[in-house]
Structures are given as structure tokens and as C-alpha cells.
Length: 246
Image 1: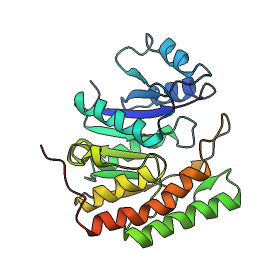
Image 2: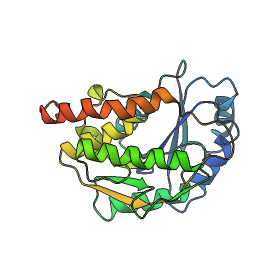
Image 3: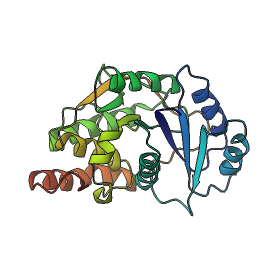
């Protein structure tokens, strides 16, 4: 039984899904993979299911009725992981924008170096982004700066979606009170962990924009991240962010 689960949300990822699964399973460390599939019309679920006999007891799929948001997909995966006693739970995209080899570095940051939460950071050593137009690079970089200013988090890449959580973090956060569903979800999880006293470590990575498939970013998701952080900060100041009652 592996101590580590990689959660990968999918919607229309037929070009990438088999390759990303095989790449994760080729790593030296043993990871399990959970696909959270939002009823992709392109057959993504069927590809995953066809691989399950080959990777029995390592590859799993949870199917949902439609596109319900990135945040709810991860919350679903977190609950699934906690029920099965994984010690380390990872968020990772399906499109190779995150290098699966860096999973081992995030694991090391938590399992060996003692971090409670490790973030694959695009901005801790400058701007490490490949294949993005300059406008999107600047938008992302300054959005993270804005989030740091509002929340006072000492995190360079506040919107990063390549993350390792220790089990203790996910057991302590009240997942029922996580409000955001888009990229603001990433901010809310980090902010909540920081407010609850957990140690966060940023691990420098190179983020490479997808070469196959279609990006899920849109203006609504971006606006949620920009305006949602003000509400998040107010909740923090008012003491409304509390640990889950056991």
C-alpha cells in the first residue's frame, strides 16, 4: 500500500490522460492515482477504465455527473483519500503543465524536511513558466502578488495547483467550509492551512503550458480568485477560519 495519492481532476483530457498516468507510475517512488472525472464527452473516463486492470490497486476513478468545479473535485478526492488512510495527498493537473517527476520533490519536502504542505512554485526563484504569452505570465505573477498583499501570506505562488498535503492538514481543515470552486480554491486552501498554523514550503518547479487539449481557465474563474481573496482575508481577521471539530 502506497502512502501517497495523486489526485488528478479531468474534463476532456483524452490526449493526455494515459500518458500522465503511465508517467506517474514510471517514477521510482510508488504513487497511487485517483482520477476525478467530470463526465467528459471525449471518452476520458473510458481510457482510464481501460488502464485499471493493468494498474490494479494503484489506479482509481471517481466519476461525477458533470463539470462541478476544480475545488469540489479536489474536496471529493481529499475525502476519498482520508477514508483510505493515505499519509500524503497531491494535487496535479492532467496536461503535463506540472512535471510528474517533481512529485518526488514535493514528497521529500513533507516526508523528509517536515513541511505540512509543499507547493510546486513557479515564482520562488523568479518566473519559471514555459509557453505562456507574456500577458498571461504578467497576469498570473501580479495576481499572486495581489493575493500576498491582501492575505499577508508569505507564499510566492499563491495560486499554484501542484501541491502535497500531509494527512494532518486535510484532517484539520474543515473541508465543508471551503467556499471557492475555481483557482481561488488553491488560495483558500493555502490561506486556511497557514491560519491554522501549518508549515508551508515552496519547491521551485518549471511550469509548462499544455501542448495538447484545451485550457479550462476563463474570466469567471479569474475574477473569483481576484475578488474572493478580500472575503477570505475578512474571514481570517474575524476568526471564522477554525479547525474541524473531531
